[in-house]
Amino acid sequence: MVLMVVLSVDLFLGVFSRYVMVRTFTWYDEIARGCFVWLTLLGAAVGVKRHAHFRLHIVVDRLSPRLRQAAVFLLPLVVIIFAGVLIQQGLVFLELGKFQQTPVMGLPKTWIYVAIPIGGVLMILYSLGPLWRAIRGLIR
Image (cartoon, rainbow, N blue to C red; front, side, top):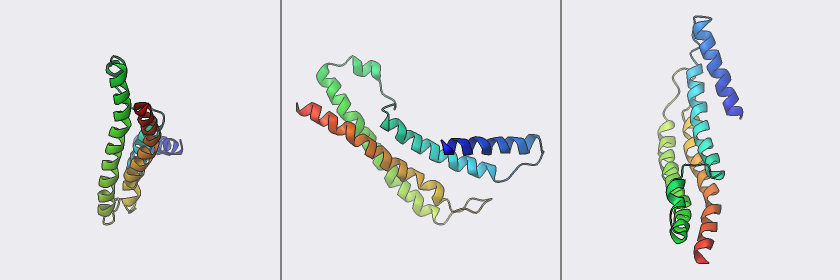
């Protein structure tokens, strides 16, 4: 929620400075970009936690009970694999970010890039419960 408020205020100030003051704040774009990256990755993790991520309900609901159980098992597994790729690639970005700074404010880009592996770790943590429940359902 804090990131959304910061992003909203930042964008408001950017528009205000451009169209009312006719002198654009140079830093608002960098803050907006960083907030947006963090919001996207933390929001994806929250979506996994709330089971609000994209699923093909129309297809899954038409499957036989056995295939539906398999789909329920595969979904968290796919999320875990995707999150693992996010973590791996996020660590690559962190390595690159050591040598990069934002152009205006001079902040290290690692502050932005660290959102990638953190989002991946949270997605994996939030997928373990559904995966465990699916495994127990398959064993029965």
